[in-house]
Image (tube, rainbow, N blue to C red):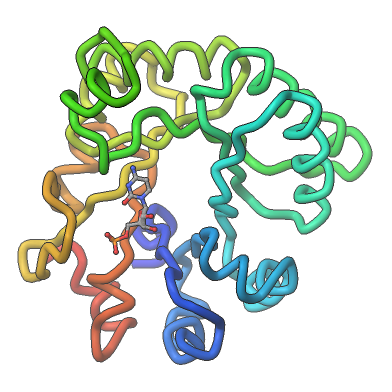
Length: 234
Ligand code: C5P
């Protein structure tokens, strides 16, 4: 059980710690990861990362950095002091931005012996192939663009990418067994879909080659979050 939970990253998407405290307490000790996104971070600041770490959770600090390399370097240098286990940047920030973010994390490792896994966000799952063409002016098909960005991330030395579970199989084939693939849009058969459209079950996502599964509302919206975590594989 513990071992399977180590592949689950629970998205703590709430407006402040108070709203999710019972969930955090219920999941402590289960072996799962937690993901702190912009909403919770904006409410609680760096302290929330320290608190989750002190409860024993590995933490994915999902702030999706995207800026000029110099600014991203400064942010990575500061954020790594919180000792998150994963940190992400948008792949569309380009090779230099990603490579310098990785170098900065490696500097931290040289001085502290630890660094976060560096993850690139490919194309947001909220974006369709059509919006990619019409709003961002990208000529490539969605899958081609996801692969293009994931390869760029790999060349820049990133440890892995976030992508839809629907893309996990071809990414795994193209990027090899070691590259980390993190997939949101996970829904066990018993769960509501909420606003996710292209959903995949936990078992299918793992079979397709996902390394970690991001699961939010099926667990955080459940009356008993710990039981929902256990039932994830049903
Ligand atoms: O509640 P749910 O399981 O839909 O939560 C999914 C989490 O994954 C949310 O934190 C969402 O922001 C994140 N995410 C996503 N699609 C992406 C990238 C991140 O759903 N492409």
